[in-house]
Length: 282
Ligand code: SAM
Image 1 (cartoon, helix red, strand yellow):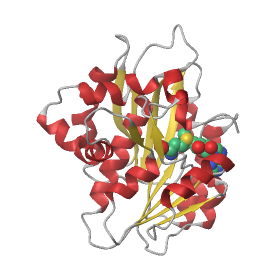
Image 2: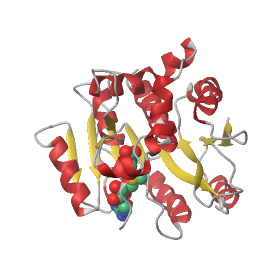
Image 3: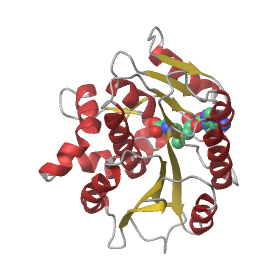
């Protein structure tokens, strides 16, 4: 396990993932009844962008750094409000230093009745995650294989759930693991809203991944992708995607409003692109 999210926190891929996660949680709060967020690959929860590691790559500058400086059209600012207000709350002076990872962002958006189960396998990162939420009765951090949690922790006792599956993609076969993980989890809890993250880079088997998902018997599956540059001269990450099962019915329209603006803010060359479409259903 070499992957450490501190090097990438707040980058363009985090912006898409966390903006969408915040929209999903915002929507879940429309009903009074409690829900649970299951974050299978949680990371440390809170990132210091002034740390040596974050400064070394500086990835956040082309992600959240750009977004915070951008002048956003009012409808987009409104849609990004849950995400950006959490960041503003952590950085009251205006200059960004602290960036919320997915578990912290979810927690910041909770009402008193909502709950978080966060899994992290890396011993050091788990320790930091655990310390971050120590004494918070709305959160349970566990050092557990997130893929196992997808089976063992579903369905949640609240019977309402948002499940984020955000693996590091440092091993071969992670796209396939997402498909089999979703298949097993959906069998246990068909009513959950699942959000699966995947990387886009040269040679990535995205088409086959989409086809495998389409072959599953899952009726509502939305997909969104944002690439920020061409893959002609790099083998690194050029974009990212999210597959959202049982999305809020408003999400596709929201993405159509937000994505063109996110694309123009985050674009690193003229090959940047964005899309949101149904993989299955609607
Ligand atoms: N979801 C986080 C966020 O958005 O802020 C970022 C997570 S990062 C992409 C992936 C994390 O998964 C890393 O912290 C890594 O240590 C952890 N990890 C790797 N393999 C794991 C496994 N099998 N189960 C749980 N966590 C794992």
